[in-house]
Image 1 (cartoon, protein in one colour):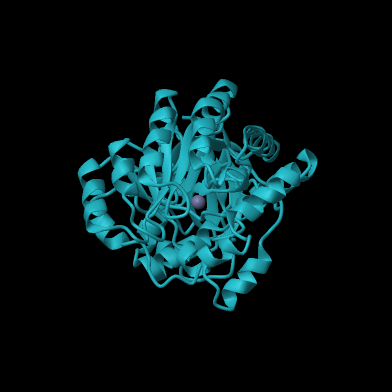
Image 2 (cartoon, helix red, strand yellow):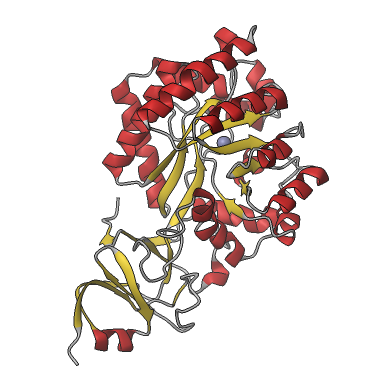
Length: 408
Ligand SMILES: [Zn+2]
């Protein structure tokens, strides 16, 4: 029998993590054709059956699905190193916001930035994420907080993603904070969100989900309920920031609204945990670099969430104020050391877990036959070492849609 032609053979791996039960446990090679995974197995068997146009030597590294970052804020123009320095000296996040730092400082910068400048910055953020193995992401607006600036943010994020070849699942986060001009009359801003911003975003078709920050000093539960109902009526999926610093009923609201996910959860209550466990649908978004970056002493109760079979993902929350890292492998380290997750649980949360939270698991997050051929070669002897090292990038090779990426 003659060998069939195929696009690419990835071979000589120490192992292949596919999240696909049909793949043999001792697999060391992957056959790819037409941008999709075709078969996983032993190199000798695959070479007998397939005749690849191109080969990629994994050089004894570990092959894993491309990482999916399901919570990033890439649309910012300048960093916030000054407030990082304040924090290093002991000033707390909410006090920093009072000094004019925080989210509203990024809003001032995004509003002032030219389109060209902002596009260049967002493209560079996507490139930094890519270098650390992110092959698809959920990206949020939320540093515009006006009709014009939020639409600009979403448009530029989409342009940047296309230019960098980063599959993007966009989320509108106009309810990140009340902008300065509406601080005295927050209900007026809610009116604008519901009557103008959400409909405008919907009309342009540039976001699949809507997000809101439920927190003291941001949106309370009643305001969030109104926003979520407007967003749902327009057909947006919901992804929610809640229980980061204070427990004010955000998780319960997320479950009630059938949100795709509720993210942060450092202050999750037992009642919130129970609501998530009963739902079984709303994902817990775990962001383990954030408490580190904010010098918080508490972490999300990840072990309890996993024990209660709550679906979860792990993301970087890449943003200039509370988690200035584009690296999911770094987040894996923090997931292991602070959330007490195993290497396998950490990798699962940033591949198949993330894909499921976005409803894209048919194509992404695993290496089953027919999945998009998005994969990484990690310079690791086995899965057990994932998240062990920190401060260095384990990604040695990247394949997206069956195309081997040049080093950038
Ligand atoms: Zn966030």
